[in-house]
Image (cartoon, rainbow, N blue to C red):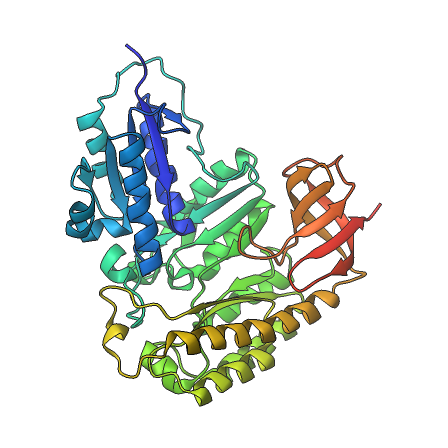
Length: 437
């Protein structure tokens, strides 16, 4: 009998990517082979995203394409909670499950494409199957979220916060490092809330006790001798405790904190923290402790009820905070989100105009921040080598969402290499460098 072959489509955020890796690891361990085309697959799994309407449509189109090109499709992921909507569009789907329903997905695959049960199949590597390059990996530390932001439906898709035991997280991190990973990107829905649901229970790693807590996790990861990057950090007061670890070089001087807005009125309407003055004071504190810290954030413009004055307040915050990396989106109604019921929706034309103004202001700030790096020496991590040279990232750049560092002519470097460079030029987003020696 031939080995059963699985095709896989993974959509959405890094947290969904980790879900895909876990499903693939389980299937590979059971003897399924993984293929990259519809025609070579006996069955296709589509891991969907259901966060905003554009992502829902992309997911539904991906399911339709898999059905057209293959015919046997299992659907999982965040959009799975809207089974009726999927079946209305694609009634021939074999099975639909929700997010992080690993066992249900595997059972559905078993039902429609049974494994061979061959004891001599290739062994899965200890770090599992990964969808990222060999030199970096996402480390998911929890599921779900306890917040109820009015624009977000994550709790209805993934439930309340559920932290992984710290020993389990650290064991996975060690396996990844042993497999050659040089950068761990810590992800969750609310990274700085890690352990709240477990009442910061004491776990064990390498025979020693460790609290299930954001600071303790950051400190332990900092002992692994690689880059550790913190994403999706909600700005709780205890985040301040982690910044000295950055100043000491234990973890990367990088914080990804989604502030979302700066108008007190809009933040209240979003059910987000509202003390903008405190945020600016804390940013100043973080920079005083760790001058190298890079701050990334995301914002929403055109939220229901946003006035010209609210938007101007947001621009004033942006100019005062001088963040290094910023993403911005126009508000998009999400099915099931409380914000859909708010009065005074902002016209699409106004949303787009505000987005353009916002990004124009941030582009100038980003250019200024990058210009200040010219002449400085730093270690970078190589992501790609092309005919023209190497494409890398600095400590201030996460893969896919931030800037890049271009090193012309450095074809001697390899993917995954660390290299010492001196920055010599910059634009609004990226840097150019030369080897330091």
